[in-house]
Amino acid sequence: MSRIYLLFLSFWLYAMPVTFAQTDTLKLDLKQAEQRFLSQNYDLIAANYEIDRAHADVITARLFDNPELEYENLFYNHETKKFLQTSYQYGQYAASLSQLVKLAGKRNKNIKLAQTGTKLSELAYFDLLRSLKFELQSTFYQSYYAALSVALYEQQIQSTGQLLNAYEIQLKMGNVAAKEVIRIKSLLIGLKAELAALLNELEDNNKDLKLLCGIPAATPLNLILPTEAIKTPGPEQLPYNQLLDSARVNRSDLKLAKTNLEYNELNLKLQKAMAIPDVEISLSYDLKGNYPEKYTGLGLKIPIPLFNRNQGEIKKAKVGIDDATAKLQKQELQLENEVYNAYRTALRNEKLYQEIDPTFSGDFNTLITGLIKNFKARNISLIEFLDLYDAYKTNTLQINKVQLERMNSRAELNYVTGSNIFK
Image (tube, rainbow, N blue to C red; front, side, top):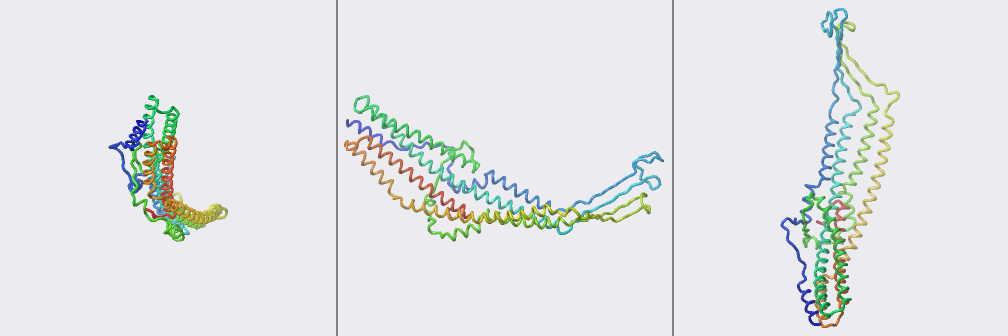
């Protein structure tokens, strides 16, 4: 039976995780991912075009109305039987030049409204940037820790596979029971099934990460998380009121709600101005169709606001102000709740992380080494050993999850405060 333990010891000593170098693998840390994201994210590029469109609206608002030229000529003279005559003796024509003059400061109000629209587009861009950056950081951390878990599974699958081969040889020699081989096979199948599910999750996260950063789909990723990023001071050193003040100053969605109210207030002023009619001034000339001949005239045209005084648009603008006010109040309350919830979550995750003994992995590896000696000495059974091995996997995965939640909660604090507290 000693041959069994020699085989088992051999498989354990040589069963180390294997990584295959790929020349086209892209090494990427979070800072590099953010740089790619800022320059290659298509949602941000599209949002930037919206800002350009808004600037074009300002250009349009600054333009004056074009003058209008009207000309009328005698088409057919039945006396001379000729067409389009313009001479004084046989022809006739009339012309006028008119210009619309807007009153009540409509042009300036339109310009201010368009400029506020540009500000809305810019704030929408920065709010999209804030949301996508949080998604990028969260996805990066999920992919990074999922890759660590995948490496753990691959190590265990390789180790368990070697153990299974050793036991199948011993089974043929009649040195072990069939139930022990079945137990190892069952464990191996379970590990492979869990690995497949984890790989699906990792591939989904990598897909989202590549889409956010504009990376080709077939590019393998090797994510790097520097030690200093993990060991930075936690949120317990930041007062809640400081985080809340930062959110009120920096959150682009709150600025967007305030600017939306400003936009609706400017729109109400414009709609009230639209109730005041504009004046059209014209200068005309008529060769012989008026008195006296070679007539020149100055015209003035203005609508009389008896029925339409823009009542409907004014009412809509007032409703828009009420709606924007309610949305601003909701945004302020939502901001407070988000900051409070993110802060409490970050404190809880930080405390849980700090409670983990940093020497846990080393102690557990020492325990596993001692376990091998006990197994060799027949002090413990195969089932006991495999159960403890499974416990090692479970605890390692749990530590990865705690670290993921800790880093995600820091990213969320950046998101809800609109700042870059944790870099």
